[in-house]
Length: 133
Image 1 (cartoon, helix red, strand yellow):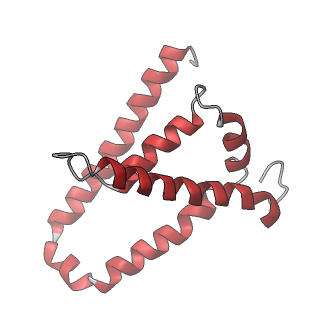
Image 2 (cartoon, rainbow, N blue to C red):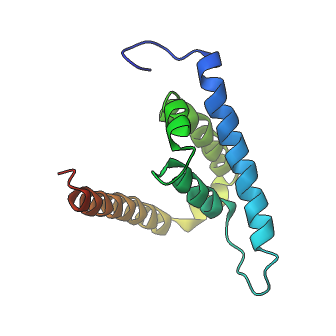
C-alpha cells in the first residue's frame, strides 16, 4: 500500500499476470536449455531469478512497466501463503523432522545467519560501488 491506501484487485491484477507469465517463461527457457547435451539439470527457480533480474534491470525495455506494476503488490501478501504451505509440508513429515534432532536446528540457524550476512555484504558492496552510501 502507498500512503496507507490499499491496492485493489484491479490494480494488482497486471502484476500477478506478469508474475505468472514470468514463471511460465522460466519453465519454457529451462525446457529449452536442458535439451543442450550435457547441460546440468538446474532448478526452475534459478531461471526465474535470472529472468526476473533482467526484467528489473535498466537494460530491459520492460523495466519501467514491470517495476511500476509489481511494486504495487506487497511482498508479505505473496510470502504468507508460501510459508503456510511450507509449514504444512513440514508438518506432514514431522516424525522425519524429529529424527534429525539438534543437527537440523544447528544447520537451519547457520543457514539463516549465513544468508543474512551474505545478503548484507552483497548489499553493502553494491551500495558502495554505486555510490548509494
